[in-house]
Image (tube, rainbow, N blue to C red; front, side, top):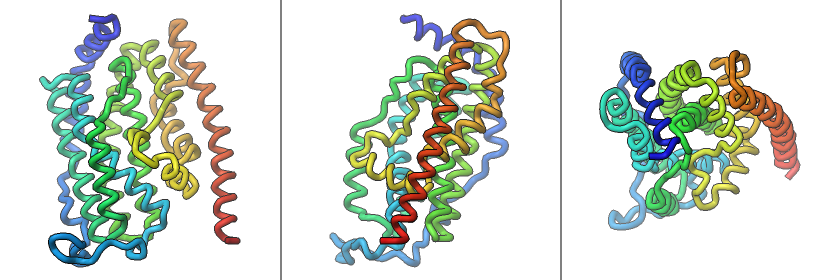
Length: 311
Protein backbone atom coordinates (compact mmCIF):
# COMPACT_ATOMS: atom_id res chain seq x y z
CA UNK A 1 0.00 0.00 0.00
CA UNK A 2 1.37 3.41 -0.96
CA UNK A 3 1.61 6.36 1.40
CA UNK A 4 -1.15 8.11 -0.55
CA UNK A 5 -3.44 5.09 -0.31
CA UNK A 6 -2.77 4.75 3.42
CA UNK A 7 -3.46 8.46 3.91
CA UNK A 8 -6.70 8.22 1.96
CA UNK A 9 -7.87 5.29 4.08
CA UNK A 10 -7.30 7.38 7.19
CA UNK A 11 -9.26 10.30 5.72
CA UNK A 12 -12.19 8.03 4.80
CA UNK A 13 -12.19 6.48 8.25
CA UNK A 14 -11.99 9.76 10.14
CA UNK A 15 -14.62 11.47 8.00
CA UNK A 16 -17.19 8.67 8.20
CA UNK A 17 -19.06 10.33 11.11
CA UNK A 18 -19.26 13.49 8.99
CA UNK A 19 -20.52 11.47 6.04
CA UNK A 20 -23.23 9.92 8.24
CA UNK A 21 -24.31 13.34 9.57
CA UNK A 22 -24.37 14.92 6.11
CA UNK A 23 -26.21 11.94 4.63
CA UNK A 24 -28.89 12.26 7.30
CA UNK A 25 -29.25 15.95 6.51
CA UNK A 26 -29.42 15.23 2.79
CA UNK A 27 -32.17 12.64 3.19
CA UNK A 28 -34.14 15.04 5.38
CA UNK A 29 -34.16 17.90 2.86
CA UNK A 30 -34.14 16.18 -0.55
CA UNK A 31 -37.56 15.79 -2.11
CA UNK A 32 -39.01 13.19 -4.43
CA UNK A 33 -39.64 14.16 -8.03
CA UNK A 34 -40.58 12.32 -11.21
CA UNK A 35 -38.82 12.84 -14.55
CA UNK A 36 -41.90 12.00 -16.62
CA UNK A 37 -43.73 15.01 -15.19
CA UNK A 38 -41.19 17.43 -16.69
CA UNK A 39 -41.41 16.19 -20.29
CA UNK A 40 -43.86 17.69 -22.85
CA UNK A 41 -44.95 14.31 -24.18
CA UNK A 42 -47.98 15.73 -26.03
CA UNK A 43 -45.65 17.69 -28.30
CA UNK A 44 -43.59 14.65 -29.29
CA UNK A 45 -43.88 12.66 -32.51
CA UNK A 46 -42.41 9.48 -33.98
CA UNK A 47 -38.97 9.60 -35.57
CA UNK A 48 -37.96 7.78 -38.73
CA UNK A 49 -37.03 4.12 -38.33
CA UNK A 50 -39.17 1.10 -37.44
CA UNK A 51 -42.14 3.35 -36.52
CA UNK A 52 -42.05 5.17 -39.86
CA UNK A 53 -42.04 8.65 -38.39
CA UNK A 54 -40.36 11.84 -39.58
CA UNK A 55 -36.58 12.19 -39.61
CA UNK A 56 -35.03 14.90 -37.47
CA UNK A 57 -34.14 18.15 -39.22
CA UNK A 58 -32.15 21.07 -37.72
CA UNK A 59 -35.03 23.41 -38.50
CA UNK A 60 -37.19 21.55 -35.97
CA UNK A 61 -35.16 22.83 -33.04
CA UNK A 62 -36.21 26.12 -31.50
CA UNK A 63 -33.11 26.27 -29.29
CA UNK A 64 -30.10 28.50 -30.06
CA UNK A 65 -26.99 26.56 -31.06
CA UNK A 66 -25.12 27.39 -27.85
CA UNK A 67 -28.04 26.15 -25.76
CA UNK A 68 -28.17 22.93 -27.79
CA UNK A 69 -24.44 22.51 -27.19
CA UNK A 70 -24.84 23.08 -23.46
CA UNK A 71 -27.72 20.62 -23.13
CA UNK A 72 -25.84 17.98 -25.12
CA UNK A 73 -22.75 18.39 -22.93
CA UNK A 74 -24.93 18.35 -19.81
CA UNK A 75 -26.65 15.15 -20.92
CA UNK A 76 -23.47 13.35 -21.95
CA UNK A 77 -21.95 14.27 -18.59
CA UNK A 78 -24.95 12.74 -16.82
CA UNK A 79 -24.82 9.68 -19.10
CA UNK A 80 -21.41 8.69 -17.75
CA UNK A 81 -22.95 7.90 -14.37
CA UNK A 82 -21.68 4.28 -14.31
CA UNK A 83 -18.11 5.56 -14.44
CA UNK A 84 -18.70 8.09 -11.69
CA UNK A 85 -20.36 5.47 -9.50
CA UNK A 86 -17.39 3.16 -9.87
CA UNK A 87 -14.99 6.00 -9.10
CA UNK A 88 -16.80 7.05 -5.92
CA UNK A 89 -17.45 3.51 -4.70
CA UNK A 90 -13.76 2.69 -5.22
CA UNK A 91 -12.70 5.78 -3.25
CA UNK A 92 -15.13 5.47 -0.37
CA UNK A 93 -16.21 1.84 -0.32
CA UNK A 94 -19.73 0.43 -0.31
CA UNK A 95 -20.22 -0.03 3.43
CA UNK A 96 -21.64 2.20 6.12
CA UNK A 97 -22.59 5.82 5.48
CA UNK A 98 -20.21 6.08 2.55
CA UNK A 99 -21.85 3.21 0.71
CA UNK A 100 -25.35 4.49 1.44
CA UNK A 101 -24.37 7.88 0.05
CA UNK A 102 -22.82 6.43 -3.11
CA UNK A 103 -25.97 4.49 -3.96
CA UNK A 104 -28.33 7.31 -3.07
CA UNK A 105 -26.31 9.83 -5.10
CA UNK A 106 -26.31 7.46 -8.08
CA UNK A 107 -30.08 6.95 -7.85
CA UNK A 108 -30.70 10.70 -7.79
CA UNK A 109 -28.28 11.44 -10.61
CA UNK A 110 -29.91 8.78 -12.78
CA UNK A 111 -33.06 10.90 -13.03
CA UNK A 112 -31.19 13.72 -14.74
CA UNK A 113 -30.24 11.87 -17.91
CA UNK A 114 -33.67 10.24 -18.14
CA UNK A 115 -35.51 13.55 -17.93
CA UNK A 116 -33.16 15.58 -20.11
CA UNK A 117 -33.01 13.03 -22.94
CA UNK A 118 -36.79 12.63 -22.96
CA UNK A 119 -37.21 16.41 -23.10
CA UNK A 120 -34.75 16.79 -25.98
CA UNK A 121 -36.50 14.04 -27.93
CA UNK A 122 -40.01 15.37 -27.28
CA UNK A 123 -38.99 18.87 -28.33
CA UNK A 124 -36.87 17.55 -31.26
CA UNK A 125 -34.25 19.91 -29.90
CA UNK A 126 -31.13 18.04 -31.08
CA UNK A 127 -30.18 15.35 -33.59
CA UNK A 128 -31.17 12.10 -31.81
CA UNK A 129 -28.91 9.87 -33.91
CA UNK A 130 -25.82 12.03 -33.35
CA UNK A 131 -26.72 12.22 -29.66
CA UNK A 132 -26.96 8.44 -29.30
CA UNK A 133 -23.66 7.93 -31.09
CA UNK A 134 -22.01 10.40 -28.72
CA UNK A 135 -23.57 8.63 -25.74
CA UNK A 136 -22.24 5.26 -26.89
CA UNK A 137 -18.77 6.69 -27.35
CA UNK A 138 -18.83 8.56 -24.05
CA UNK A 139 -20.04 5.67 -21.91
CA UNK A 140 -17.84 3.15 -23.72
CA UNK A 141 -14.83 5.31 -22.86
CA UNK A 142 -15.83 5.44 -19.20
CA UNK A 143 -14.49 7.83 -16.61
CA UNK A 144 -11.35 7.96 -14.54
CA UNK A 145 -10.42 11.06 -12.57
CA UNK A 146 -6.79 10.15 -11.75
CA UNK A 147 -7.04 12.37 -8.67
CA UNK A 148 -4.25 11.22 -6.35
CA UNK A 149 -6.01 11.25 -2.94
CA UNK A 150 -9.44 11.26 -1.33
CA UNK A 151 -8.87 14.88 -0.31
CA UNK A 152 -8.33 15.75 -3.96
CA UNK A 153 -11.54 13.92 -4.81
CA UNK A 154 -13.54 15.77 -2.14
CA UNK A 155 -12.16 19.10 -3.34
CA UNK A 156 -12.92 18.24 -6.96
CA UNK A 157 -16.45 16.99 -6.22
CA UNK A 158 -17.23 20.17 -4.28
CA UNK A 159 -16.14 22.41 -7.15
CA UNK A 160 -17.61 20.22 -9.87
CA UNK A 161 -21.05 19.84 -8.28
CA UNK A 162 -21.39 23.61 -7.88
CA UNK A 163 -20.20 24.20 -11.46
CA UNK A 164 -22.70 21.62 -12.69
CA UNK A 165 -25.49 23.37 -10.79
CA UNK A 166 -24.64 26.66 -12.45
CA UNK A 167 -24.39 25.16 -15.93
CA UNK A 168 -27.78 23.44 -15.66
CA UNK A 169 -29.46 26.51 -14.25
CA UNK A 170 -27.90 28.93 -16.74
CA UNK A 171 -28.69 26.66 -19.69
CA UNK A 172 -32.32 26.52 -18.59
CA UNK A 173 -32.49 30.30 -18.33
CA UNK A 174 -31.01 30.67 -21.83
CA UNK A 175 -33.45 28.23 -23.45
CA UNK A 176 -36.36 30.61 -23.90
CA UNK A 177 -38.52 27.59 -23.10
CA UNK A 178 -40.47 27.58 -19.81
CA UNK A 179 -40.59 23.78 -19.68
CA UNK A 180 -36.85 23.51 -20.17
CA UNK A 181 -36.21 26.16 -17.56
CA UNK A 182 -38.38 24.31 -15.04
CA UNK A 183 -36.65 21.00 -15.76
CA UNK A 184 -33.15 22.45 -15.56
CA UNK A 185 -33.99 24.24 -12.31
CA UNK A 186 -35.19 20.93 -10.88
CA UNK A 187 -31.96 19.17 -11.90
CA UNK A 188 -29.91 22.09 -10.56
CA UNK A 189 -31.66 21.72 -7.20
CA UNK A 190 -30.41 18.13 -6.97
CA UNK A 191 -26.90 19.24 -7.89
CA UNK A 192 -27.03 21.90 -5.19
CA UNK A 193 -27.81 19.31 -2.52
CA UNK A 194 -25.00 17.09 -3.79
CA UNK A 195 -22.64 20.06 -3.61
CA UNK A 196 -23.70 20.75 -0.02
CA UNK A 197 -22.85 17.16 0.93
CA UNK A 198 -19.36 17.36 -0.56
CA UNK A 199 -18.76 20.90 0.64
CA UNK A 200 -19.63 19.80 4.17
CA UNK A 201 -17.21 16.91 3.91
CA UNK A 202 -14.47 19.12 2.55
CA UNK A 203 -15.08 21.67 5.34
CA UNK A 204 -14.66 18.93 7.94
CA UNK A 205 -11.56 17.68 6.14
CA UNK A 206 -10.17 21.22 6.16
CA UNK A 207 -10.53 21.30 9.94
CA UNK A 208 -9.04 17.84 10.42
CA UNK A 209 -6.28 17.98 7.77
CA UNK A 210 -5.79 21.69 6.97
CA UNK A 211 -2.45 21.52 5.19
CA UNK A 212 -3.29 18.49 3.08
CA UNK A 213 -6.82 19.69 2.29
CA UNK A 214 -5.59 23.10 1.12
CA UNK A 215 -2.87 21.50 -0.99
CA UNK A 216 -5.50 19.27 -2.62
CA UNK A 217 -7.79 22.22 -3.32
CA UNK A 218 -4.94 24.22 -4.82
CA UNK A 219 -4.17 21.33 -7.19
CA UNK A 220 -7.84 20.92 -8.14
CA UNK A 221 -8.44 24.60 -8.83
CA UNK A 222 -5.28 24.92 -10.91
CA UNK A 223 -6.10 21.95 -13.15
CA UNK A 224 -9.91 21.99 -13.00
CA UNK A 225 -11.83 20.58 -15.96
CA UNK A 226 -15.42 19.40 -16.23
CA UNK A 227 -16.01 15.66 -16.92
CA UNK A 228 -17.16 15.98 -20.57
CA UNK A 229 -13.81 17.37 -21.74
CA UNK A 230 -13.12 14.10 -23.61
CA UNK A 231 -16.33 14.30 -25.69
CA UNK A 232 -15.63 14.63 -29.45
CA UNK A 233 -16.08 18.24 -30.47
CA UNK A 234 -16.00 19.41 -26.84
CA UNK A 235 -13.79 22.43 -27.46
CA UNK A 236 -15.93 23.97 -30.19
CA UNK A 237 -19.10 23.33 -28.20
CA UNK A 238 -17.55 24.73 -25.03
CA UNK A 239 -16.46 27.88 -26.86
CA UNK A 240 -20.01 28.54 -28.04
CA UNK A 241 -21.34 27.86 -24.55
CA UNK A 242 -18.75 30.25 -23.12
CA UNK A 243 -19.51 32.99 -25.64
CA UNK A 244 -23.22 32.71 -24.80
CA UNK A 245 -22.48 33.33 -21.13
CA UNK A 246 -23.90 29.99 -19.96
CA UNK A 247 -20.55 28.89 -18.53
CA UNK A 248 -17.19 30.58 -18.94
CA UNK A 249 -14.33 31.90 -16.82
CA UNK A 250 -16.48 34.72 -15.50
CA UNK A 251 -19.23 32.35 -14.35
CA UNK A 252 -16.67 29.89 -12.96
CA UNK A 253 -14.93 32.63 -11.00
CA UNK A 254 -17.95 34.60 -9.75
CA UNK A 255 -20.48 31.81 -9.22
CA UNK A 256 -18.29 28.84 -8.33
CA UNK A 257 -14.79 29.53 -7.04
CA UNK A 258 -15.26 32.76 -5.09
CA UNK A 259 -18.44 31.65 -3.26
CA UNK A 260 -16.78 28.38 -2.26
CA UNK A 261 -13.64 30.09 -0.98
CA UNK A 262 -15.72 32.57 1.03
CA UNK A 263 -18.01 29.92 2.51
CA UNK A 264 -15.12 27.65 3.46
CA UNK A 265 -12.92 30.50 4.68
CA UNK A 266 -10.05 29.06 2.67
CA UNK A 267 -7.97 32.22 2.48
CA UNK A 268 -8.27 32.90 6.21
CA UNK A 269 -7.31 29.49 7.61
CA UNK A 270 -4.64 30.09 10.27
CA UNK A 271 -1.97 27.95 11.94
CA UNK A 272 -0.84 26.29 8.73
CA UNK A 273 2.43 24.50 8.15
CA UNK A 274 4.69 25.30 5.18
CA UNK A 275 2.72 23.13 2.71
CA UNK A 276 -0.60 24.62 3.73
CA UNK A 277 0.73 28.18 3.61
CA UNK A 278 2.10 27.61 0.10
CA UNK A 279 -1.21 26.12 -1.01
CA UNK A 280 -3.14 29.06 0.45
CA UNK A 281 -0.90 31.50 -1.38
CA UNK A 282 -1.28 29.47 -4.57
CA UNK A 283 -5.08 29.61 -4.28
CA UNK A 284 -4.95 33.38 -3.83
CA UNK A 285 -2.76 33.70 -6.91
CA UNK A 286 -5.12 31.46 -8.86
CA UNK A 287 -8.08 33.67 -7.97
CA UNK A 288 -6.27 36.67 -9.43
CA UNK A 289 -5.52 34.72 -12.61
CA UNK A 290 -9.17 33.69 -12.84
CA UNK A 291 -10.30 37.29 -12.46
CA UNK A 292 -8.04 38.25 -15.35
CA UNK A 293 -9.37 35.40 -17.48
CA UNK A 294 -12.92 36.40 -16.54
CA UNK A 295 -12.35 39.98 -17.70
CA UNK A 296 -11.03 38.75 -21.02
CA UNK A 297 -13.93 36.29 -21.35
CA UNK A 298 -16.42 39.09 -20.73
CA UNK A 299 -14.79 41.25 -23.38
CA UNK A 300 -14.85 38.33 -25.83
CA UNK A 301 -18.54 37.67 -25.18
CA UNK A 302 -19.32 41.31 -25.81
CA UNK A 303 -17.42 41.24 -29.11
CA UNK A 304 -19.24 38.06 -30.18
CA UNK A 305 -22.61 39.61 -29.34
CA UNK A 306 -21.77 42.79 -31.23
CA UNK A 307 -20.62 40.76 -34.24
CA UNK A 308 -23.91 38.90 -34.16
CA UNK A 309 -25.87 42.15 -34.22
CA UNK A 310 -24.03 43.40 -37.30
CA UNK A 311 -23.96 40.10 -39.19
